[in-house]
Length: 225
Image (cartoon, rainbow, N blue to C red; front, side, top):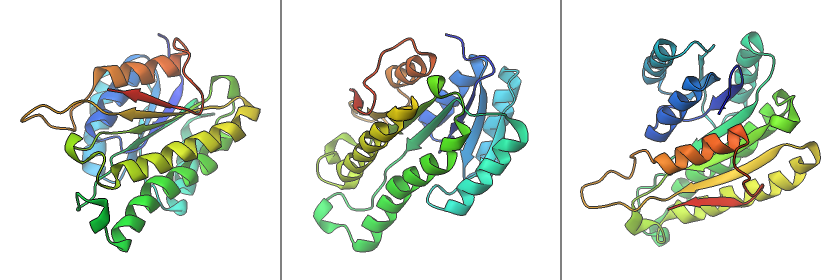
């Protein structure tokens, strides 16, 4: 697997999955742009990447649902890189209520706005940076919730919306040879285990897609159990 000198942006980079994925990318020679709002944690992750690899890594502060932040991210990328090879959007979906029937309008709107509208904004804004279309990849990685609420809260609702957006975006960008994927990361959660733990199969799947070593279904959802 050789990602030498390729450049990827990872949103929500300080989540457990985002951190491990960023580390894997850096160790394979890629330049990694760490995006998120937790500036102290992002700076610590940047330092770790710089200590373990020689790539040109950087931090961008990004609230995914704000267009002005995506525009500023493009400007930051243009300062240091000629192009992007991939966009990896990590989704950590959290709701206060375990039942979808108890969710308020404000909570529903906030979660959908962040993960669905934010995804659309990110793809629309960063698409022109994917100049080598034959190598370009956009991946939505949906982190797990607690297993016992998968079917009863907003997790599946938002996941379904992200998957639908992935499908429609892939149909449009297929004309430009840009591949778009959704990876639904659903490990089984054992007693006293954290649902936020990293999953090697999910990481390996993302890395295989980026390197071209795995033929994944463009526009469809890849389920990691």
